[in-house]
Image 1 (cartoon, protein in one colour):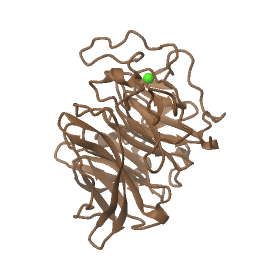
Image 2: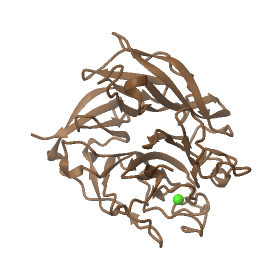
Image 3: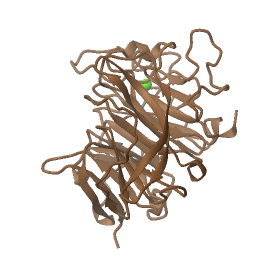
Length: 382
Ligand SMILES: [Ca+2]
């Protein structure tokens, strides 16, 4: 085990022993502190933003669109031509193209990792692929595409895929996998990838030091289980923070520990959409409590750490985008009850928040009245 996987660095908050605190609204930041610039409003369900580091196409900003396109922002402008050579993506409901993430060795290899829904109506699944990015004068293309992993079993539904990636310091990755909505019991089933955080090596295989490697009847890719629809994950100071959608209420921020059970659907602070209880238990022996839980649902869609230079007050804080609450939460990782609302005045569902190399904050916003999906860049006011 490498040091980065030794969780709970002493400085991080410990999960509470009793019931998790409920968070609702938080104080709003003063919008006059920053300036919001629209890069483009011509996107269709933008899902993930990636800044290409040193390597092929350095400086390009890639944005996935859920219908299965990968777009390029080059020199501050959205190129007309999407990237060619993508895997075949199944699009319906919540299904489509999800994450785009450069490999940690991108400078040498030019490899991009993509997550997406693969298959067809009634028979589809979460998949991970990688390919080499080759910039061209008009845009870019993917070469040497390889499908690395497909979650089992396949599902009939078009909902709750998870699909976010976080890279660990040892070059392996964590992939969030939703429970497919209709299969919530499988979040506790160890022969299923549904409702899990999975750890894979760069070739899509289960590393030898995964917690359930060699355990009969347990899929070796499983890192943690009992998740509902985790769409937000990031590393910070050797720990892994994850946020997931609850049912009606009960959205969670969790500190992910190797091999741990996060409770769904045995324990939840949320109710079914019908208003019926899914479980009468908010806590359950042997399962981890969230650090905090949001009721009503905030709908967390992505999580990152602010590590830039432009907003010194945000350094080392978590930024979590929210769909239902239409803002970004600034969260103190050492005391996660301390939260602030950012960018609520934009009034849009926020699908992704990312920090550019120059320290600006970029948001992928879903379409709202009279406007398409937007990509905006936030810098301090002068
Ligand atoms: Ca939970």
